[in-house]
Image (cartoon, helix red, strand yellow):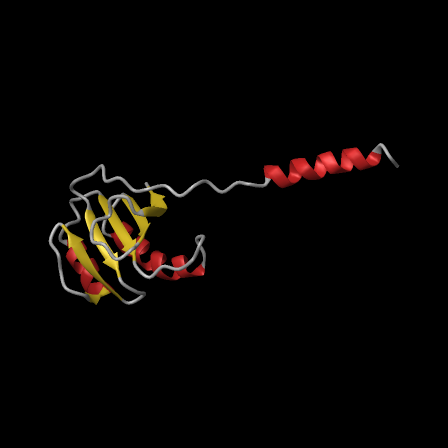
Length: 131
């Protein structure tokens, strides 16, 4: 019984320390100056920030503007008012329509960022990136 206790404690220690699989948040650094940048204000409205700023409008109207820029390969979507500490249902509800819409327009590289109320995506936390 006395031998079993140290082995159990060692095993428990290894299991508890090996479960840390989360990586630190990565800051976004813009490498493609021709990317389209969209600010998703909530689940229904957004605005184009780059290459030409637009007013706040329905997501479909923003996607229509992105269609005219579809010769570009990269789209960056800033999710404002995003409150989840990890990717979950809120991301799926807001990110999936953007992903499907942008991918169907031909965008090959799509990046989702956590918004902080600024228009420049440089340095924002990357939530997900699709190639």
